[in-house]
Length: 73
Image (cartoon, rainbow, N blue to C red; front, side, top):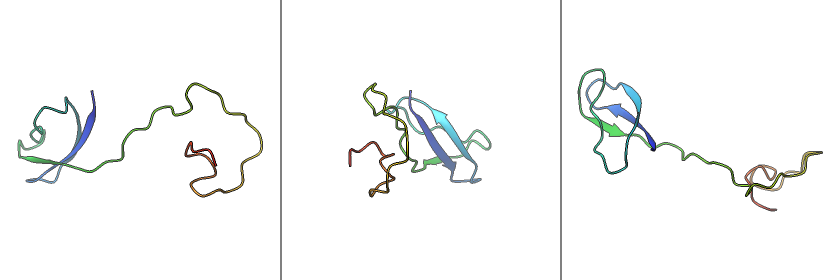
């Protein structure tokens, strides 16, 4: 089940909630007020397809993070 970050419109309390995407935004656990969903970075899991990358000397900088982004440069 995905997790979402929320902030209360009444008391500004920030919290994380886990629920189905089809469920409505939860009420604030502090004051019971209406909440808004905050923009958060998506979770990234895996990406290597189960293959181990060789280790050794660091790759030279090639644009987006020296190959650490998972792209083949």
